[in-house]
Image (cartoon, rainbow, N blue to C red):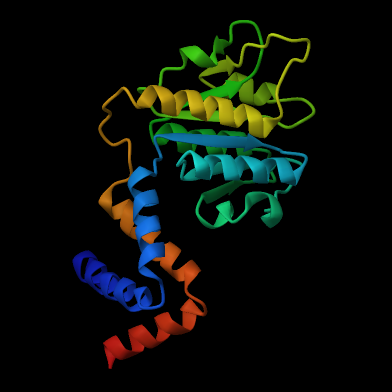
Length: 233
């Protein structure tokens, strides 16, 4: 099936599924889609406590971040629905695991291929301040686990290190709080800049819209089957 033909038929499917979605909910989705971005993204390395990773997913959704990348080295991540409050339905999760131990390399290679500068969050000497982040370029922020922070492997393969200046005795914030501060600073800076390609393309919005409609409509798999059968009859 040609791309244009498929796109046209998917528009028909959206219209078909849209019958079962309220106008208010569609309007909210369009508002969210208009503000979604892949210009910034978040990477979580081997998170020990699932509720912390789930809290970061919720944070990313709140800041309009579409993608979260999860490195599963020794710990597998499972969504905690009580913490995400549904955010996992709207954010795309990309997991990386390798029996050969190449999860970091696989993830970073994919990110760099897509033009991201990879910055690991760490208070190490030479780390730049969150307030000096270059918000005019694609950034992937890497957060480590609750016990040890980002690994030496991540530090060595990242393009740089970044930290939140601390004024007290404690060295770091909880991971979800840290993610909130970093993303707040980036989105605050971006408001004063005009960056081409910051928001999702129309094709990306279309793909997400279709995905979200299918998630919202009950038994959408049956509705979709009926739609294609009617179309092909």
